[in-house]
Image (cartoon, rainbow, N blue to C red; front, side):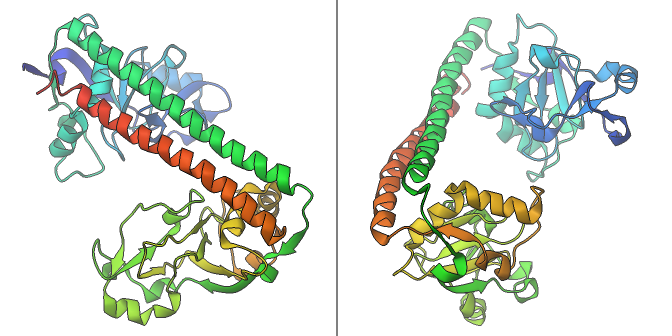
Length: 385
């Protein structure tokens, strides 16, 4: 397999790196950030614009259609293609690649190689110790497979098909979530509410930050340390791996969680909940979480967890406290005074059973997405050995 250095096939440069906030306007030239760059494309859901005079002075750095824009800081190597509607936009500290001849190298092929081939792996090596900052000199070391244009087209076609399947799967997951919420509203729209303080048997806020230092946490140990990332999607997910030794665990034993406990985020994006799974034997919560244990004669933990994120009234109550801004924090008084739907245990069980049936479908779809994403990586193997 023949490889060529990226600079043999394309011109590369870094986007603007100067302070530009004083040039922000309501309408003008779009400004793209590293966080705007996703494998699925460019995210402009929160647009930022620059005034035309400033943009004109920096027109040499403006993007052109089919440029590849790559993350410089963060998830380095993640890339997207500049579409028609962003022709003439500018980037802030992003890496831009402009192919000399698209009859020799397809923009989509290069973009897909960076995202799904071993382009990212190479960039992390060039960037020394996989740091989260990639300079242009490092990027320009990238060697890319030099395939004939027909092979490139075949790879692009296959990846386009796989990506379309993944997109359909993701839409299915959104639809399943909507079905669950619609069922909740159908069953409990007129149901009476009770204060959280009346349905929760016990509350426990996580330890003070000074009780657990960063140097006491590692990627292996005796007990798992739960954080907001384990609840932020309103279902339990294993994300960051954080452990403490048995001695530290015994010191913080009062903050232990048990399977079936509800954990709630109290700082940052507040009010997110999940249920501790059965496979966690030893674990404590971090300072940004709270443990809630329901009175099972009144409220099932599984139902409380659902009601707290499915009920629009809860969202309104949260917005009423924080005026819809980025959440700063909860305290126990706030949590205890929320009003939550409280149907009979019979109907709670009925809804939980329905949700579990939908969750099983969702997990199957998520598993299929993982398989498809693995297939994306394999597409290049046939050609780029």
